[in-house]
Length: 302
Image (cartoon, rainbow, N blue to C red):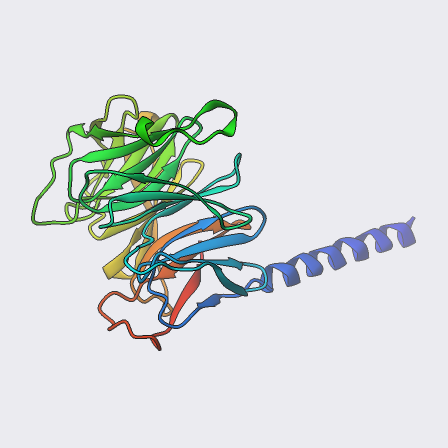
Protein backbone atom coordinates (compact mmCIF):
# COMPACT_ATOMS: atom_id res chain seq x y z
CA UNK A 1 0.00 0.00 0.00
CA UNK A 2 2.82 2.39 0.97
CA UNK A 3 4.56 1.61 -2.33
CA UNK A 4 1.31 2.35 -4.27
CA UNK A 5 0.84 5.66 -2.46
CA UNK A 6 4.47 6.57 -3.10
CA UNK A 7 4.07 5.81 -6.80
CA UNK A 8 0.89 7.87 -6.99
CA UNK A 9 2.54 10.78 -5.21
CA UNK A 10 5.50 10.53 -7.54
CA UNK A 11 3.18 10.62 -10.55
CA UNK A 12 1.33 13.67 -9.21
CA UNK A 13 4.61 15.49 -8.53
CA UNK A 14 5.89 14.63 -11.99
CA UNK A 15 2.69 15.90 -13.62
CA UNK A 16 2.84 19.06 -11.54
CA UNK A 17 6.42 19.65 -12.57
CA UNK A 18 5.56 19.00 -16.23
CA UNK A 19 2.61 21.41 -16.05
CA UNK A 20 4.80 24.06 -14.49
CA UNK A 21 7.39 23.57 -17.22
CA UNK A 22 4.74 23.93 -19.93
CA UNK A 23 3.43 27.11 -18.32
CA UNK A 24 6.94 28.50 -18.03
CA UNK A 25 7.57 27.79 -21.71
CA UNK A 26 5.20 30.53 -22.85
CA UNK A 27 7.37 33.48 -23.85
CA UNK A 28 7.12 36.74 -21.94
CA UNK A 29 7.66 38.70 -25.15
CA UNK A 30 6.90 38.02 -28.81
CA UNK A 31 8.67 40.10 -31.43
CA UNK A 32 6.80 41.57 -34.39
CA UNK A 33 8.45 42.58 -37.67
CA UNK A 34 10.47 45.78 -37.51
CA UNK A 35 8.46 48.78 -38.68
CA UNK A 36 5.14 46.97 -38.14
CA UNK A 37 3.25 49.75 -36.29
CA UNK A 38 0.73 47.48 -34.50
CA UNK A 39 -2.52 48.53 -32.86
CA UNK A 40 -5.05 45.67 -32.74
CA UNK A 41 -4.65 42.06 -31.61
CA UNK A 42 -7.04 39.11 -31.42
CA UNK A 43 -6.93 35.37 -30.70
CA UNK A 44 -7.88 32.71 -33.21
CA UNK A 45 -8.10 28.96 -32.78
CA UNK A 46 -5.74 27.25 -30.35
CA UNK A 47 -2.80 29.50 -29.52
CA UNK A 48 -2.98 31.47 -32.76
CA UNK A 49 -3.02 35.27 -32.58
CA UNK A 50 -3.35 37.99 -35.22
CA UNK A 51 -1.93 41.54 -35.14
CA UNK A 52 -2.81 44.32 -37.58
CA UNK A 53 -0.56 47.07 -38.93
CA UNK A 54 -1.38 50.77 -38.97
CA UNK A 55 1.21 51.28 -41.70
CA UNK A 56 -0.53 49.45 -44.54
CA UNK A 57 -3.29 47.20 -43.15
CA UNK A 58 -1.19 44.03 -43.17
CA UNK A 59 -1.98 41.18 -40.74
CA UNK A 60 0.64 39.16 -38.86
CA UNK A 61 -0.19 35.67 -37.57
CA UNK A 62 1.71 34.08 -34.71
CA UNK A 63 1.60 31.50 -31.93
CA UNK A 64 1.69 32.38 -28.24
CA UNK A 65 3.21 29.01 -27.31
CA UNK A 66 6.18 29.18 -29.65
CA UNK A 67 6.49 32.95 -29.86
CA UNK A 68 6.96 32.77 -33.62
CA UNK A 69 4.96 34.15 -36.53
CA UNK A 70 4.97 35.61 -40.03
CA UNK A 71 3.16 38.14 -42.17
CA UNK A 72 -0.13 36.45 -43.00
CA UNK A 73 -1.93 39.05 -45.12
CA UNK A 74 0.24 41.51 -47.07
CA UNK A 75 -0.41 45.21 -46.70
CA UNK A 76 -1.86 47.59 -49.27
CA UNK A 77 -0.68 51.18 -49.63
CA UNK A 78 -3.19 53.58 -48.12
CA UNK A 79 -4.90 50.99 -45.89
CA UNK A 80 -4.88 50.67 -42.10
CA UNK A 81 -5.65 47.82 -39.73
CA UNK A 82 -6.77 49.23 -36.37
CA UNK A 83 -9.11 47.03 -34.29
CA UNK A 84 -9.34 43.36 -35.22
CA UNK A 85 -11.57 40.53 -33.98
CA UNK A 86 -11.91 36.82 -34.75
CA UNK A 87 -15.26 35.21 -35.62
CA UNK A 88 -14.80 31.66 -34.36
CA UNK A 89 -17.90 30.07 -35.89
CA UNK A 90 -17.02 31.13 -39.42
CA UNK A 91 -13.21 31.32 -39.03
CA UNK A 92 -13.11 34.95 -40.19
CA UNK A 93 -11.16 38.06 -39.26
CA UNK A 94 -12.91 41.43 -39.09
CA UNK A 95 -10.69 44.49 -39.36
CA UNK A 96 -11.49 48.17 -38.74
CA UNK A 97 -9.86 50.42 -41.31
CA UNK A 98 -9.43 53.59 -39.26
CA UNK A 99 -9.49 56.76 -41.34
CA UNK A 100 -10.19 54.69 -44.45
CA UNK A 101 -13.85 54.28 -43.34
CA UNK A 102 -13.85 50.59 -44.25
CA UNK A 103 -14.37 47.30 -42.46
CA UNK A 104 -12.67 44.35 -44.16
CA UNK A 105 -13.31 40.68 -43.54
CA UNK A 106 -10.82 37.91 -44.32
CA UNK A 107 -10.74 34.12 -44.28
CA UNK A 108 -8.70 33.44 -41.13
CA UNK A 109 -7.16 30.27 -42.59
CA UNK A 110 -6.29 31.32 -46.14
CA UNK A 111 -6.01 35.08 -45.68
CA UNK A 112 -8.31 35.74 -48.64
CA UNK A 113 -10.21 39.02 -48.61
CA UNK A 114 -13.89 38.08 -48.51
CA UNK A 115 -15.65 41.46 -48.47
CA UNK A 116 -15.15 45.18 -47.86
CA UNK A 117 -17.82 47.35 -46.24
CA UNK A 118 -17.57 51.14 -46.71
CA UNK A 119 -19.17 53.85 -44.59
CA UNK A 120 -19.50 57.56 -44.00
CA UNK A 121 -17.51 57.78 -40.79
CA UNK A 122 -14.73 59.43 -38.84
CA UNK A 123 -12.18 56.94 -37.52
CA UNK A 124 -13.23 53.28 -37.36
CA UNK A 125 -11.38 51.97 -34.35
CA UNK A 126 -12.25 48.71 -32.61
CA UNK A 127 -14.33 45.62 -33.42
CA UNK A 128 -16.59 43.28 -31.45
CA UNK A 129 -18.05 40.19 -33.14
CA UNK A 130 -21.22 38.82 -31.52
CA UNK A 131 -23.58 36.02 -32.54
CA UNK A 132 -25.83 38.49 -34.33
CA UNK A 133 -23.61 41.23 -35.73
CA UNK A 134 -20.24 42.88 -36.00
CA UNK A 135 -19.98 46.21 -34.13
CA UNK A 136 -17.28 48.81 -34.81
CA UNK A 137 -16.61 51.97 -32.82
CA UNK A 138 -16.19 55.33 -34.52
CA UNK A 139 -13.93 57.57 -32.44
CA UNK A 140 -14.92 60.81 -34.17
CA UNK A 141 -18.61 60.40 -35.06
CA UNK A 142 -21.11 59.46 -32.32
CA UNK A 143 -22.20 56.17 -33.85
CA UNK A 144 -21.53 52.46 -34.11
CA UNK A 145 -21.06 50.61 -37.36
CA UNK A 146 -23.32 47.53 -37.43
CA UNK A 147 -22.86 44.65 -39.86
CA UNK A 148 -25.59 42.03 -39.23
CA UNK A 149 -24.47 38.43 -39.55
CA UNK A 150 -26.58 36.25 -41.81
CA UNK A 151 -27.83 32.83 -40.75
CA UNK A 152 -25.75 29.85 -41.81
CA UNK A 153 -22.48 31.77 -41.89
CA UNK A 154 -23.09 33.62 -45.14
CA UNK A 155 -21.64 37.11 -45.33
CA UNK A 156 -24.22 39.91 -45.39
CA UNK A 157 -24.58 42.07 -48.46
CA UNK A 158 -22.75 45.38 -48.28
CA UNK A 159 -26.09 47.21 -48.33
CA UNK A 160 -27.15 45.47 -45.10
CA UNK A 161 -24.53 47.28 -43.03
CA UNK A 162 -25.81 50.29 -41.08
CA UNK A 163 -24.68 53.17 -38.88
CA UNK A 164 -26.31 53.25 -35.43
CA UNK A 165 -26.31 56.61 -33.57
CA UNK A 166 -25.18 56.46 -29.94
CA UNK A 167 -27.66 58.14 -27.61
CA UNK A 168 -28.16 58.39 -23.86
CA UNK A 169 -25.33 59.24 -21.47
CA UNK A 170 -22.40 59.37 -23.84
CA UNK A 171 -21.47 62.78 -25.24
CA UNK A 172 -18.66 63.06 -27.76
CA UNK A 173 -16.00 65.73 -27.33
CA UNK A 174 -15.04 66.94 -30.84
CA UNK A 175 -11.56 67.85 -29.57
CA UNK A 176 -10.83 64.42 -28.06
CA UNK A 177 -10.66 60.74 -28.92
CA UNK A 178 -14.00 59.19 -27.99
CA UNK A 179 -15.35 55.63 -28.35
CA UNK A 180 -12.46 53.20 -28.60
CA UNK A 181 -12.41 49.59 -27.34
CA UNK A 182 -15.59 47.51 -27.40
CA UNK A 183 -16.68 44.07 -26.15
CA UNK A 184 -19.92 42.15 -25.69
CA UNK A 185 -21.14 41.15 -22.22
CA UNK A 186 -24.46 39.59 -21.14
CA UNK A 187 -26.26 40.69 -24.29
CA UNK A 188 -24.97 44.26 -24.00
CA UNK A 189 -21.99 46.05 -25.48
CA UNK A 190 -19.37 47.80 -23.35
CA UNK A 191 -17.27 50.60 -24.80
CA UNK A 192 -14.65 52.94 -23.40
CA UNK A 193 -14.51 56.68 -24.09
CA UNK A 194 -10.78 57.34 -24.01
CA UNK A 195 -10.66 61.10 -23.59
CA UNK A 196 -13.26 61.19 -20.82
CA UNK A 197 -12.06 58.06 -19.01
CA UNK A 198 -15.55 56.54 -18.94
CA UNK A 199 -17.13 53.15 -19.61
CA UNK A 200 -20.61 52.75 -21.08
CA UNK A 201 -23.12 49.95 -21.41
CA UNK A 202 -24.75 50.02 -24.84
CA UNK A 203 -28.03 48.51 -26.03
CA UNK A 204 -26.97 46.89 -29.33
CA UNK A 205 -30.48 47.22 -30.75
CA UNK A 206 -31.06 50.92 -30.08
CA UNK A 207 -27.65 52.47 -29.45
CA UNK A 208 -28.79 53.88 -26.10
CA UNK A 209 -25.88 54.19 -23.66
CA UNK A 210 -25.70 54.23 -19.86
CA UNK A 211 -22.56 55.22 -18.00
CA UNK A 212 -21.06 52.45 -15.87
CA UNK A 213 -20.32 53.64 -12.32
CA UNK A 214 -16.60 53.07 -11.66
CA UNK A 215 -16.73 54.26 -8.06
CA UNK A 216 -14.51 57.26 -8.76
CA UNK A 217 -11.95 55.37 -10.83
CA UNK A 218 -11.10 56.79 -14.26
CA UNK A 219 -10.07 54.88 -17.37
CA UNK A 220 -8.53 57.83 -19.20
CA UNK A 221 -6.36 56.69 -22.11
CA UNK A 222 -8.54 53.57 -22.20
CA UNK A 223 -7.96 51.75 -25.47
CA UNK A 224 -8.56 48.04 -26.02
CA UNK A 225 -10.97 46.02 -23.87
CA UNK A 226 -10.82 42.29 -23.17
CA UNK A 227 -13.35 40.27 -21.19
CA UNK A 228 -13.15 37.04 -19.20
CA UNK A 229 -16.40 36.26 -17.40
CA UNK A 230 -17.12 39.27 -15.19
CA UNK A 231 -13.51 40.48 -15.36
CA UNK A 232 -12.88 43.36 -17.74
CA UNK A 233 -9.35 44.31 -18.75
CA UNK A 234 -8.89 47.92 -19.87
CA UNK A 235 -5.63 48.73 -21.64
CA UNK A 236 -4.65 52.32 -20.81
CA UNK A 237 -2.17 53.07 -23.56
CA UNK A 238 -0.19 56.22 -22.70
CA UNK A 239 -0.17 55.27 -19.00
CA UNK A 240 1.50 51.92 -19.74
CA UNK A 241 -0.86 49.87 -17.62
CA UNK A 242 -3.75 47.42 -17.75
CA UNK A 243 -6.63 47.96 -15.31
CA UNK A 244 -8.59 44.92 -14.11
CA UNK A 245 -12.23 45.66 -13.26
CA UNK A 246 -14.99 43.48 -11.82
CA UNK A 247 -18.33 44.08 -13.55
CA UNK A 248 -21.36 44.45 -11.30
CA UNK A 249 -24.96 43.24 -11.75
CA UNK A 250 -26.67 44.56 -14.85
CA UNK A 251 -23.40 46.21 -15.91
CA UNK A 252 -24.45 49.25 -13.91
CA UNK A 253 -21.16 49.39 -12.06
CA UNK A 254 -17.61 48.09 -12.10
CA UNK A 255 -14.95 48.08 -9.38
CA UNK A 256 -11.18 48.20 -9.70
CA UNK A 257 -9.47 44.95 -8.74
CA UNK A 258 -5.87 45.85 -9.58
CA UNK A 259 -3.59 47.54 -12.09
CA UNK A 260 -0.78 45.84 -13.97
CA UNK A 261 2.26 47.47 -15.51
CA UNK A 262 5.46 46.13 -16.98
CA UNK A 263 8.92 47.42 -17.78
CA UNK A 264 8.31 45.83 -21.18
CA UNK A 265 5.33 48.09 -21.96
CA UNK A 266 5.78 50.78 -24.59
CA UNK A 267 2.31 52.28 -25.05
CA UNK A 268 0.22 49.09 -25.14
CA UNK A 269 -3.00 49.59 -27.06
CA UNK A 270 -4.99 46.37 -27.05
CA UNK A 271 -4.82 42.92 -25.49
CA UNK A 272 -6.12 39.42 -26.09
CA UNK A 273 -6.56 36.28 -24.01
CA UNK A 274 -4.75 33.26 -25.40
CA UNK A 275 -4.08 29.98 -23.58
CA UNK A 276 -5.38 31.54 -20.36
CA UNK A 277 -2.88 34.39 -20.54
CA UNK A 278 -3.27 38.06 -21.43
CA UNK A 279 -1.11 39.45 -24.24
CA UNK A 280 -0.77 43.19 -24.92
CA UNK A 281 0.56 44.67 -28.14
CA UNK A 282 2.82 47.72 -27.90
CA UNK A 283 2.10 50.47 -30.44
CA UNK A 284 4.95 52.70 -29.20
CA UNK A 285 3.07 55.91 -30.01
CA UNK A 286 5.51 58.79 -29.63
CA UNK A 287 8.42 56.73 -30.94
CA UNK A 288 9.12 57.78 -34.54
CA UNK A 289 8.04 54.90 -36.80
CA UNK A 290 10.79 53.84 -39.19
CA UNK A 291 11.39 50.60 -41.12
CA UNK A 292 13.80 49.63 -38.33
CA UNK A 293 11.64 50.52 -35.31
CA UNK A 294 11.12 47.47 -33.09
CA UNK A 295 7.64 46.35 -32.01
CA UNK A 296 6.53 43.49 -29.79
CA UNK A 297 3.80 41.79 -27.75
CA UNK A 298 4.06 41.55 -23.94
CA UNK A 299 2.63 38.77 -21.79
CA UNK A 300 0.77 40.47 -18.95
CA UNK A 301 0.99 38.90 -15.46
CA UNK A 302 -2.81 38.78 -15.16
